[in-house]
Structures are given as C-alpha cells and as structure tokens.
Image (tube, rainbow, N blue to C red; front, side):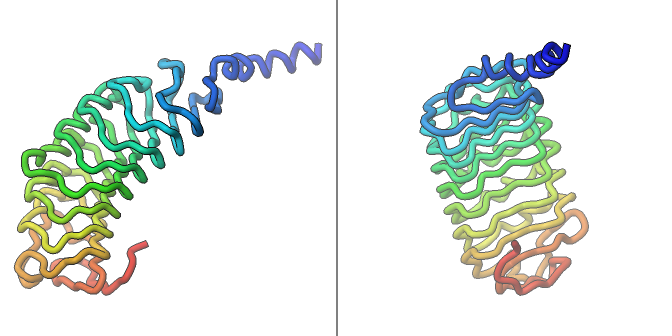
Length: 244
C-alpha cells in the first residue's frame, strides 16, 4: 500500500522526466531549463510548456516559429544570437516576458514583435545594437501592454523620433550605457505611463531645447536618471552616476 502511494506520487514526475530532452530540466508546472551543448530548440511538449529558459547554449540561429505556442516566459539570454527572423515570435500570443539580453544582436527587424499583444517585459540589454533605422520606427507598434523595455548597454548612437510613439503603457524605459549624444524633440510624447527613464552613462551633450524647454512628457513627469545632466523637465532632478 505504501509503495503504491509513493509510486502514484512520483508517476507524473517520472513520466515528465522520460519526455524531457537531453540538456534540459523539466518540472510538472510546465517549466523547462536547458543549457550546455545545445544547437537547436529542444523538442518540448507544446501544450504543457509555459516557461522556457535557454541559456549558455551554442544556439546561433533560431528557426522560424519553433517555440511552444503556450509560453508565458521565454529567456534566451547568454547565447550567441546575431539575428532574429521577423516571424520568429509570431505564434507566442500568450507571452508575457521575453529576455534577449547578453547576445550579439546588432539590429532589430521591423515586425519582430508583432502579435505579442500580452507582452509585459522586453529585455534587450547587453547586445551590440548600433541603431534602429528610421524605416523601423514601428518596431514597437504592437506592444500595447508593455510595462518595461530595456535597451541598456548597447551601441545606440541615435533614436528615431517615432520609436516609442506607440508605447502607451511603458512604465520603465532603460536607455542607459549607450552612445546617445542627443534626443529627438518629443520622442517621449506618447509615453503617458512612463515612471522611470534611465539615460545614465551616455554621451548626451544636450536634451531637447538644451534642457530649458519641455521634453514633451504626456503624463506625469517621470523620475529621470541622467548621470551628471540635470533637466528641469524631469520630476526628480537627480545627479546620479548610476540608477541601479
């Protein structure tokens, strides 16, 4: 009787382990963590995988629409990704968090994040993104629920004036540790929910109007982290070296 009880308790985990790909650790809650000598997305159960972490792998290229469609959380940090196919994430309509930090991404293609209408967090820090070309200004146009966007620690030298114009729900915007020398006028005009704007450790020589005129925040003035720069348009006039 006791043996039967224990076996019944362990059966779900044993069954799951039998179907968990090599290099991955899976649990009954739908979480899969994969690492090591992996060159492609493991064949996980598409109906029961909700959280996927692929970190420190040898994956350099991701095949189109190869992720499990019910994912809520996808972490692809610390890989060797250089490019993302335009439709790579288009089937992930339930995704809430996407982490692409610490890769080798140099650019982002328009439409990359289309259909991610439930996304709350997008982390793109610690890549090699140099620019987001003007023709890509609608890059973030389909993220109505996005709360946090991190583009910190890239090589961005300039931003298109319309880049953030559709991010009406974003609360935290991290642009620190780039190479920005100036900001387009009214670039934040539609970010009415913005609470924290981090511009630390850039090469800012002036803000719109040299800091003497409105930066066109459409909502309450956010907390601005500007390093050794101080603008009267920010709710908190802070001389800080780091916002962390």
